[in-house]
Amino acid sequence: MRTGIRIASLGVLALLIAGSASVAMDAFAANPKYNRVARRGTPKVDGALDDAAWKGADWQEMDVFAGGANRPKGFGAKSAVLWDDNYLYTAIEVDDETHAVPKAVVPDAVNLWKGDSPQHRMDLEYDSFDNSPDDVEWGYALQDKAVLQNAWASPGNIEFTSIKIVREDGAKKTYYETAVVITMHKPKQKLTAYVKENPKAKMGYSDMVNANDGADRLGWVEWSSGIGAAKAASQFGTLTFDSAPQAVDPAGKAATTWAELRAAY
View 1 (cartoon, rainbow, N blue to C red):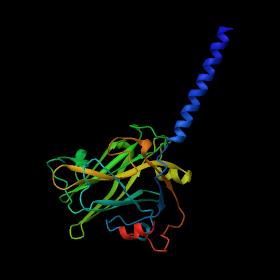
View 2 (cartoon, rainbow, N blue to C red):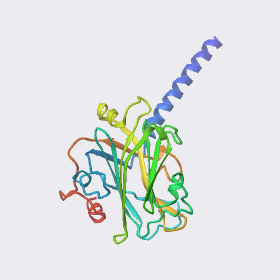
View 3 (tube, one colour):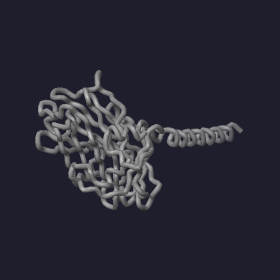
View 4 (cartoon, rainbow, N blue to C red):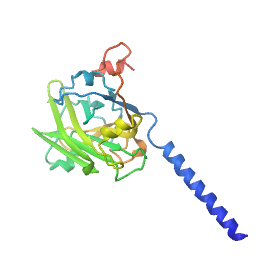
């Protein structure tokens, strides 16, 4: 009789554990406050960000500042994501009075995060596992006239195809535009092919821009969270993929500047 009770108890325990795991996966897959759409489009990767595809993209402000006591004056950023049959495209427009990637703190690409630079991280499995080795994290920076690039997590799952960075000191702006090829872990296929086969695919995503005015890193702005302070996929927003007509703001005009972006929402 005791053996039967024990077996029954173990069965109940297994069901409870499985149920808890299932609830955790559903409940913490991403930060519900942050959702963005990768529109379908093929921009010219030149750092101008003036393509029709970018003008209609889902631009969102990096609204979380962290890592420093005070936000640098005039520092802010917005970003967008596009995709087509071959590449995942990212664009970031940064307002920054001083662009700096000093060699004293950024001696190589691995340390580019200590200077002015974007970082991206994706939870391809959408499983919300913090510090997951299956996440893909990458970044890039403009140091003098050289472009630095690095992948800190799953470097074998990303190929840097094109990176264009344009700094306009007069306008106090930096424009970042990239095309990358990301490969899924399971199944082993390109992300773009996977999305075409799974149009309702969701992935965890966050992006950020580090701030440096010439010495040490001063902090960062981030869309959602989960990169700068800790590698926490449970804090990521959700990235979905769309092939529908690109969205415009309520006035019927693509939001392409800070003023237009803020006025649209």
